[in-house]
Length: 364
Image (cartoon, rainbow, N blue to C red):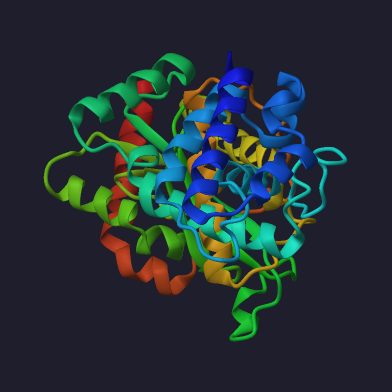
């Protein structure tokens, strides 16, 4: 059925655009280009990372916001969207979808499609698909799932940073060099127990410390405000590169009791969820892998990263099978929180350590 609807969608759109533009190039493209929806389901998912029904829904979400101009109007919007999805999936401009499929899209055209589609996804779909819990009901649902799956009470999310390689920027390039000596954006991701991404921050240069990104983020500030307004139970989990705060749990550095050992072991098991989430995100959208390198300015690269994050959540929603996770920047050695950050929250850090002790005594 998706095959039929996909063919009809392509043909209907081409007919409509032919009438609007008074040109006949579309019919030549149908003759010269294999319909993407005519390939097998498995091949379609491999090339676009979505099964056909999900892809049709995504196309319907994006297509109304696309515009035509004299250069791109000759290419049906469906193919422009699919060419961007194929780049997100593979990280390559090459025509990896077969000899003729998407052959109407040269590398410059694909690059334009990527920028257009990623901008639309971020502008129009972000709020619907990536959002931190907004009320008690949503927070309680997240806590329930973490408790069921990992036996960690009062957890609403797990935070971690991951580096996405970008080309050397023309300005201030040195601040984009991370500690592994390549240019990147350091992206903060918060996920739930089902690998849904609750928050993405993708604007900081690679040299920026995770703790600084957390403290500057809307979620970090919202968690502090919620705590000060009476929500003293909801917590985020992070690794030892983050400060220990009343609303941010980290491992005990040197466990001295059986309870602290149990806490650390369960903490490690639970925190692996965000590592898997990042691995699945990069396995699904391989343009984010270190060896692919996003050849765009930091601002355009950030949009691509955010678009892939939104699409990841859509894949979870549409029950697309997870790909094998791909980890390319896992670093087991957490950097200590910089002094200039630690000194800003001394009182809350002491309170955080005290409340972590109480959390451990009560629950472990």
